[in-house]
Amino acid sequence: MATQHSRSAARLMMTPAVFLLLVWMLVPLIMTLWFSTLDYRPMRGTFDCCEGLANYTRFITSSAFLDSVITTLQLLGGVLLITIVGGILLAILLDQPIWGQGIVRILVIAPFFVMPTVSALVWKNMFMNPVNGLFAHLFKGLGLEPIDWLSQAPMFSIILIVSWQWLPFATLILLTAIQSLDSEQLEAAEMDGAGPLSRFGYITLPHLARSITVVVLIQTIFLLSIFAEIYVTTGGAFGTRTLTYLVYQRVIESQNVGLGSAGGIYAVILANLVALVLMRVVGKNLDA
Amino acid sequence: MGRITLDKVRKAFGDVEVIPPLDLTINDGEFVVFVGPSGCGKSTLLRLIAGLEDVTSGEIRIDGTDATHLSPAKRSLAMVFQSYALYPHMSVRKNIAFPLKMAKLDQAEIDRRVEGAAKVLNLDSYLDRRPGQLSGGQRQRVAIGRAIVREPSAFLFDEPLSNLDAALRVGMRLEISELHKRLATTMIYVTHDQVEAMTMADKIVVLQAGRIEQVGSPLELYRTPRNKFVAGFIGSPKMNFIDGAEAAKHSAHTIGIRPEHLIVTDEGGTWTGKVGVSEHLGSDTFFHVHVEGFPETLTVRAGGEVNLHYGDTIHLTPDAAQIHRFDAEGLRLA
Ligand SMILES: Nc1ncnc2c1ncn2[C@@H]1O[C@H](COP(=O)(O)OP(=O)(O)OP(=O)(O)O)[C@@H](O)[C@H]1O
Ligand SMILES: [Mg+2]
Image (tube, rainbow over all chains, first blue to last red; front, side):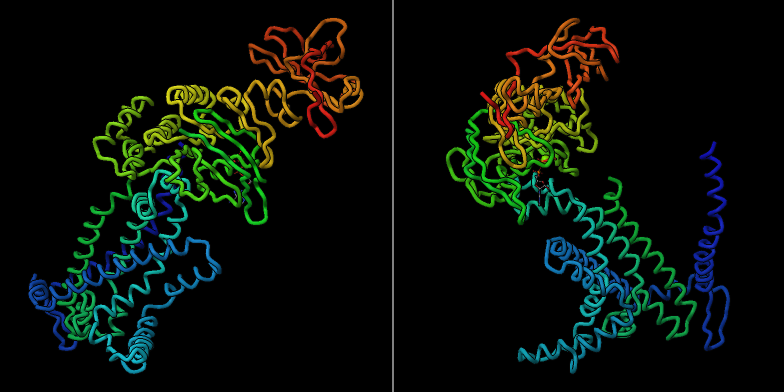
C-alpha cells in the first residue's frame, strides 16, 4: 500500500517537470515541422503555406546535402576515435602512481571547462595561425614551410580542436572505470601467463567496454550538434560544412526558414539513426 | 616437482619491515598452511613466493633454481585468490582455459584439459555460464579449476574459503584435501582459521608479525608448542594460562592447560570455582569458570550432557601430564 501511495504521489509530483520537458521539446519540434512545409523567407516577405514536401526534396537534392552528411560522420568518427584511444591511454597513464598526480589530473581535465568558442579561437589564433601560430614557429624552427592548417587541412584541424575539448571527458570516465578494476584480476592474469598486452586486451578492455559505450553515446549526442568550432574557424568553408552548419546557412545566410527547417528535420532523423545503430552495436554492453 | 626454499627472505614496504629475514623449506608434495593473526604477513609471504611482490633481500628457490627475480608467469605456480579473481566477462570454460590459451596450447588439448578439470570439480553443467551466475562455492571451484589445468608445480591459496558459509567451508575443505591427495602437488595455504590449519596441513607455519614462531605437524604444535603464542593460537578453545603462585608450584613463570585437559569432579580437586557462562555445542559443553584468586576465567571442556548451571560450584583437576610450562619470556620449559 505504502509503496503504491508513494508511487502515485511521485507521479503527481513529477507531472509539472514532465509537462515542462514535453512542451520544451515538442513546441520547437512542431514549429520546425510546420515551418518545413512553408515557403517562408522573411527578408523577401514570403510566407506561403502548403509547399508540401517541396522543401524536403529541395534540401536533399542539393549537392551540399550529401557532402554535409559525410562531413558530419567524418567529424563524429574522427573525434570518437581520437578521444576513445587517447582517453584510454591517458587513463592508464594517470592511473599509475606518479609524482604530482593531483595536479596532473586537474590539468588534464581543464580543457573541458573552456567554452567551445574560446577554445576554437585559441587554437585558430595561437596554434594554427600560419604566421604567428605556435605550430608555424615550430615548423620554421625545424626549417619547414609553415602550414595554413585551417585551409590546407581544415577537417583535420577541426577534428583536432573538438577532440582536444572532449578528450578530458573520455579520460575522466575511463579513468574511474580503470580504477574500479579489481587488481587481483590483473594479478591472476599475470600468474596465468598473460603479458602486458594480453592483460590489456583480455582483462582491462572488456572491463572498460561499458564505460566506452557511455562515452560514445554521450559524445555522439553532443558532436552531432557541433557548431561554434566550425563557425569560428572555417565558417563552413573548405568542406567543413556539417549538417548542422548547413541548416544554419540555409536559415540565417540564405534566409530560407522553410528549407532550413526541412534540413533540421533531416538532422533529427540522422541523429536518431546514429543513436539507434550505436545502441544496437554497443548498447548490448549496457545490459550485461 | 615443487620444492620451495626461502633463504633469508626479507620484505619491507618503505621503512616498514613486514617480514624480517626468514628461512623456510617446503618439500615436494607437502600441504603447508601459513597461519597467524590478521596483519602478520601471511598474504605478503605468499605473494613473495608467487612473485607478485619483489623481495627486498634474500633468495627464493623453486626446485633448486633461483626464482627470486623470475616473473610470476615463469615460476609455474598457480594461485587461488581470496576474491577468486575470476574474469567476469568470460564464461566458466574460458576462465578455466585462459592460462592454457596464454601458454598457446592447441585447442584440442585445451578442450581436453578443461573438460577434465570440470569433471573433477563437478563443473560440467556450468561451463557456459558467467561467473556472476554462479554461487560462491561454484566460483571457488572455478578458481581452483583455473589453477589445476596448468598442472603447476605448486598451488598457492590465499584464504580461499573465507567468503563461504560455515557448511560450505567444511565441504570445500574436504574437497581441497582430497584434491591434494589425488594430485600430490605441493600446496601452500594461507588462513587465519586454526581449525582449517589443523585439519588440512601436513605442516603448519605459525607466523606472528612476519616472524615464524614454529613450524611443525599439527599434532606437534598441539602437543609441544614452542612458546605461549603458539600454545594460545593452536587449539580451540584457547589454552588457559595461569601466572603467579600456581605457576610457581610447577617452577614456571606461566603454566598453560587446555580446556580438554581439565577434569571436572564433584568433590576435592585442585581448584574450586563457580560456573559462569556456558556454551553448549551438543557434543561438548564449554564452561567459563571463575576460580578464586585467578584474574581470568578458566575454560573447561565437559561432555555434552553435563548438568551444571550458572553459579554452581565446580571442582577442577588439571591432567598433570598435560601441563605446559613457560618461562618469563614465554618460551617453553622442557
Ligand atoms: N602494499 C603495501 N604497502 C604497505 N604495507 C603493506 C602493503 N601490503 C601489506 N602491508 C602491511 O603488511 C602487513 C602484512 O600484511 P598481509 O596482507 O600480509 O597480512 P595478512 O597476514 O595476510 O593478514 P590478513 O589475515 O588480514 O589477510 C600489514 O601490516 C599490512 O599493513
Ligand atoms: Mg591476507
